[in-house]
Length: 413
View (cartoon, rainbow, N blue to C red):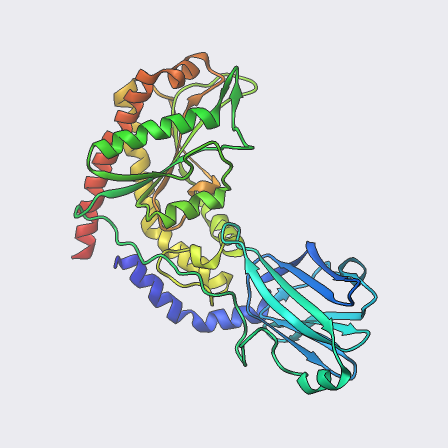
């Protein structure tokens, strides 16, 4: 295990009290009105759907006098929620919500007559990280209702706060030290409903997919790399989904491939981007708020940690990863320049691209010129030029991986 992951695991333990304190100060999730609602059926059943910005522990039980359903969360922000917008049935007479003790939120639905919890479940979207709590209520005899009040109705759960079944996290990936092939994730930009830049009859998504397929073949033929594409065809893939694909595939390196176009002005040549320092803090915060907790850092279970701890751990991971990304970007600039000749006068830039925000994978975005520039477009459409550019990237990866492995061996000693 690398030193950074040893630090991460230690930090999970050391910052445990901070996590508990932070949960008393801020909600982990928000209730989104779009996608939420309480509706009635002709049968007398009530369907409750609550859309949360992320999965959090919850429990469901009923109380009597008056008959009411109670849903507790650790914890949810109800800002902007109103009875008029959420309740769409007269089977629910009243609604109350708020913090009922530090770190815990409560939603109370007062029923017009006794009803039992027929089913209760939470569904999560692994690509986005949000969650849906679905509860079905059915009419029940008053005596039976009274006998079951206070019982948690999540199916087999006792006094434990409910979460979805834990997603198996990828094992902590050790940094390559020359003992194995380097795993490269190639990410052809855009795709599907998002064609990217368009110029004349060319689309960025198509050109980058062709380039990625050719690059994959060249890297594999070298015998020094394992390679996979985040998308193999013309399909849409979210920015976070691309990071998820890279992590599931065990990527040691993430290369995002693009070609820009300008509506006005002229620009030409290849540009290589890394994540900027200014964007890094925002990246960690946004990922902590919106991404699937098990998918933030490979081998580190953040399911029980709040945003503060998750952000700290991602910052620690970037202490090691960002300098490696910078060195990789520098190597690619030199490699492409040697292979194809002139590139941009300022080929090395940094920005807050979402696909560069994986905290534990060295990540670089390569803009292979501008489709709005006739020469760059001709190059991108030319198999011979693409071959030279790919050869430049292969040479860059060779140099970088050898230097990176040597550095890793020194750090291990």
